[in-house]
Length: 358
Image (cartoon, helix red, strand yellow):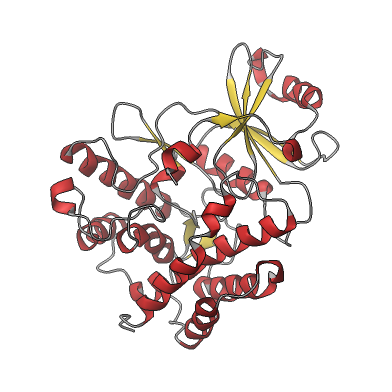
């Protein structure tokens, strides 16, 4: 699958995800200030987005993005667009690069499910971790921008930015292992994967002590969940906050490091096996060191365990997509191709357990 082609741009809204556009138009006219709404509206669906359906809303004057819960049967606690809206509003007030949000609608009578609306941020989304089409210097600068942006996120005091109750401050990794193990084991529609069963057992037996650090964590921080400036190595917006919470920043950063462990090619967008020096991309150790300098650390604790957990969690997310396919409420047209990565990813996680230094 060509990830850039599969995920870039919009398409006609699928039959299952259509809604009352006139009702949305009325809501926008009441919530977009100073007449910027400028209806009537034209609605299209972004190609990407596996969990919460995402739409482009065009008017005569502006363009907006709408994120909603999918219709149909949902797992408890999943698709929490209300949490996405809250963290975007709080971080935007601090000057962190996120889209401006205009309103959250929890009245399901408008379009059928809860949703929120935010700015359409211009710029470039990079779908491949080796940043194709750039010079060595440009790649190095973009990697530095990603590193600086996640360090900035982890530098906020949750209490000071109004997110002190956005999650629990301690026990993050233990709770996450329990949550994703339960979610994997409980999604019977998706079936079982032998490697995943073994990972559930390994993660439970090797759980490290709590790190003692807590911050706002993104939960899915990678290059294709951010918008870069079209001309310069600047992160203009970080997207897709569905998995955000309060938690261990080392775990959040380690998830970002998975790009170094995953291969490239048709199944994954990773850096393993590439000549990073020739590409101008920092080594994993240098990238970790830059983050540690920015966040006042001398090392990244429990990295080997967290690599295994983060790969497991990503596989569990794919397992959830498989379940949504079985239930008929997967958002992306490419969901079936995404699910093909589930077993290879679980096997990769299992291979990392054999190299982990605990």
